[in-house]
Image (cartoon, rainbow, N blue to C red; front, side):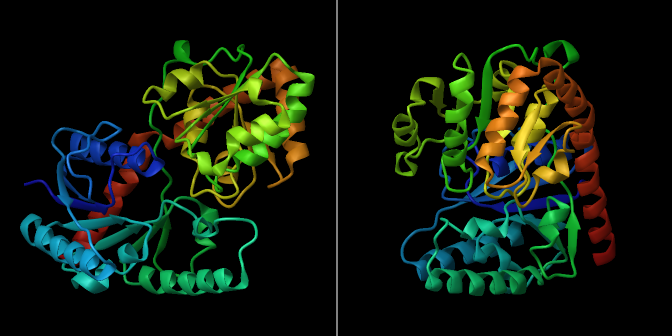
Length: 372
């Protein structure tokens, strides 16, 4: 009889990194390790998932609405009901909110529980100029997060750097698995005059910094373009910033696409301008296509993936001039571009699903055997 894994998360209909990772892990567990996998979502209704999940995965959706008390009561009652029906051998919670962190306390856990942290704590910082009151609220929330995390049997973070954010004794590092690994004949030729970046318009992704750096790049290389793929938020004002800087003719803003592999293949440089990250899934995806990556050395993720000047380039976080210079360097030096791209593709094999999901299988078995 297959062992049962229950994932508890929010809606998985979007194009985000958590959704992509969950589709890979859960599907691989079903197909290669014979698990019975269940996923509980919130308010997804009948919306299709953006990424493909194995057909044998059972999805259960909770409909919760109303004021916070009514919402949480409905959520908690439904979680308990599904756990009673499914009888999971292990539960993995992928919910970055406080309700997810305190779930073991609320449901009086009946089996081993794991918490998966997919983002940095810095996600709570929404701009560069938080008020004293906002900073105090963030400080209190960080303290509560540590308390909630202590209720879990294991607390999984994605990088060694992320461990520094938490004061917990149950920490373990398991990075995200790679979404795809194309054949050698299908990787990028690195000959197109195109720079790519992928992620939603937000303070976190730092595209305002990238666009400012692009102004200097394009003054010397006017025949190159920057393609930004991700959910467009007009309130972030990126298109207006590009117009104001006079670089809008060389920047293309695209909504998320399911065939992002094709876009990596058509590009020659990947740039990550994030202020902070949980991991940097897009880095390993680009590297799989032999595309060299330049990234701000932000907390946390890029430095766990990129070895500076070996398989990519790390730039001091926030140094816009240095970012411009490194992009220009890879534009002009084709040999360096191809050398870094080749090393990137070789090194990224460490993130293949057969290696990463095997770590999850070992963790599940260890916790299940200890509980029985």
